Length: 174
Image (tube, rainbow, N blue to C red; front, side):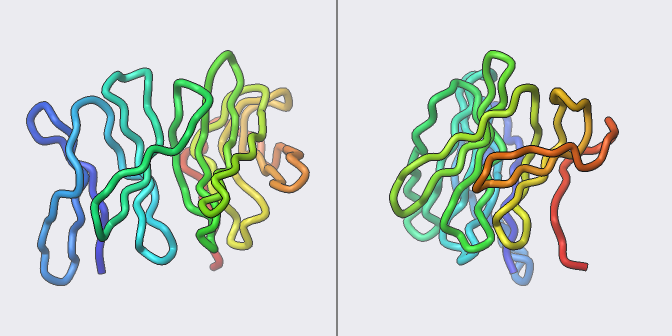
């Protein structure tokens, strides 16, 4: 019944909540620089988003959708993007980049612990499998360009489908 929309408004970026039934558009947060909606938690209580005042310094935040209070997620690298909640909502996934390495970070929302899975190369927009034990992402690694599968428990990566024209892969039960 609701969407989260990123829009440009003058010199600022704005995240809006849009009610599809009433057509009401409610601003959630505004800022200069990079501001991009990422993912809504399975229960609909939190929004993970990317914010950075400078173009090369995006960070990951959680917004409590009831109180509108933001929480910054601790990050080790300067460039962070692509936040997504796990299917059960216990983890927040985000991508960190720096020094030719892409790291997939799994942040446990209850314990606040982080697990980092390093990938030698570049990854873009990872997505959880429906069961939450694998990720799929477009990347360029030692095996070439294509869609990579990443097993979360073992951190093993596998070039699943070679190619260079893939963007925003996602899982679905069809």
